[in-house]
Image (tube, rainbow, N blue to C red):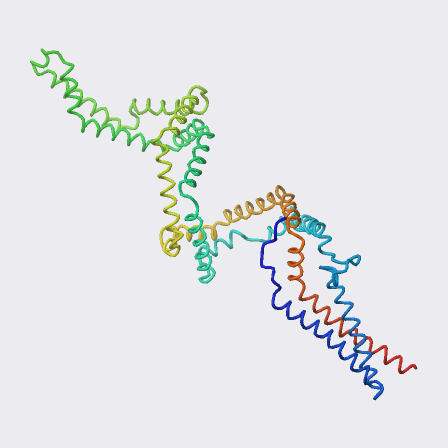
Length: 419
């Protein structure tokens, strides 16, 4: 059995009220014995005795009732006492069922969430956070994040992150995604800047490596060509021709080679999406890339950079909020404030998520509550409940003593008048 978390010492208010209730009961008993001795000296003391006697009976009855909720009075196994300890499991089941029937019901949650403007609240907090609340939130959250990041084993956590990324990459079919991206880019002509960049890179590479071309032509040429110097002429013609071709491709969007390159890209996009053989080649390449030690080192370095960045933000959240991150968050808040379609979409998503969680995990939450209460040991749950409601129960004892005394006084008065 597990012990319920929390501090089980009775709160000061409960101790004080218990003392008051018990003291009042003792006072009634003392007043009863005193008035009983003084009745022969004056008939008025009979009224005091009736008040004290009834108050003592009422106080004792309420003490018994209050005590019987949590334990056996005076340790005697009287039937129908120690109600809470005997029915702990049933109380847990009833509490869980109450939550399920009155709170974790999808219509109730949907109706409640429909009245909440989550996007608006987030927008107001991002654009103009309350200084005190925002500061406390950032300080508390950042401290918690920093402690968690520092407490966790960096190598183990990094290994988990790396394994998760590698697993996700291994499960993802790259070829169809790449083909779809390439098709979308070509439909919006976003591939043309890349093609222009490739042509410029080829021109720069040609200029930077013309000596290699000359050397290759010189080595491949025969002795006669070298003796006559025609190898140099051939090299110049070759370099000039390639350079002119690249310049024409760069300046003429309708150049045949550019069109052929675009057709090749279009065929590649189709093959990536629909050709099984191309998909298999890409998957093999992806597998080799993920298993490559260089890729593993890159993932390690990527996680370390992310962890260092998170720690820097967590240790100094105010600086982060004043920087680029803070500006992005404020822009997000302004967007949520002005774009009602986006706000409506977010609110709808939050509402559906809450309803979905209730529908999918409501029974699990009910079982969690029930099993948690069942897992608490009986003395602990008794102390916890008594500490929670015991102060009000002590007021019942006080009221029972005083009301009982007043009822006794009225009965004695009626008896005297009618007698």
